[in-house]
Image (cartoon, rainbow, N blue to C red; front, side, top):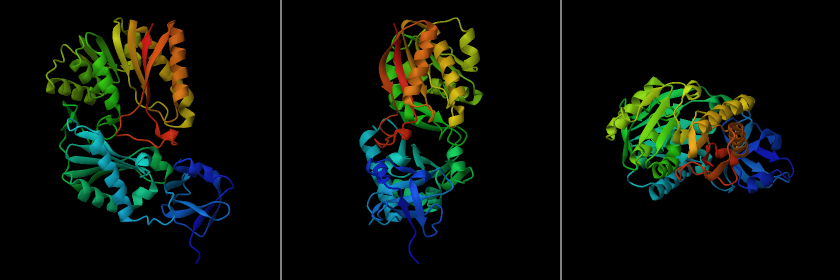
Length: 393
């Protein structure tokens, strides 16, 4: 029987040559053979020459996920082990010893599409979002256990990406000892308690470390408002940076408890740095106080393309309210982690908010995830987190 393979439409191989890791079904001329979903197939130009190897899943809009441009490489346990070793070595080189919580594997950014691995001290949390990685789950767990020697590996494979791959939500222990209810980690020598099982994402917003470092440098002598504060990441950095006061606003009572605990853990009095349990959309319009520095780091408003219009209105409203509560010369650090809100659209939304507030804003810096969240240069879709540091003139 002739082995299964993918034949692309004429010219579509340029997508691969550019380094983009995805091919949609529309790029495929035909499938030869009867490949299984989640398997690895050779990807051929229209003339039949192999140009890549990719994971295949006809259930997904992303029909092919490129693994390598080398047609001779075996996609086996040694392949996965080498990719994981390379990703871990990069973090060792880039992340200081004063930080014990980091992203070790960033999916396509590390050549492992659909696999996220986060380290929290001696524990790992993994998230799998593609059928390919789901089929390799046990082998990946064994590789992570032997290569990284964690105390335990916990899985949190959730979200719409799994649904699009034909997968159900799954969470629970994969290997070793379960994490404590609150696991303590270090980030630049600040101490944080994280909840790996019930917390948001994999327990902490690891992607914001670089922006938190910047906020610390800008906070001396300021009055800071941290909206959507979660467990107080930005708040702790602002307090250590010498802020006069830091007000943290978060809807989740559980997260507010973590925020207060983290303030106390680092020697800061929550009475001087209040934590408010409230919906930011209700809180800001009724607030009379003005601030020198405001952080807006909301959850993703747009879960799919059909949510973009509604999400855009939400982003505009919170940025309008944030700008209205800034002193002249004040700073706004505003973010979106919605994949479907791209960088250009986000800038337009914030600019419209500034115009409605009747102010002109300076762009001081564009903000992105830290160095432990690498993305492929050609993979714009991988840059889900975008942020702007602005100054009201």
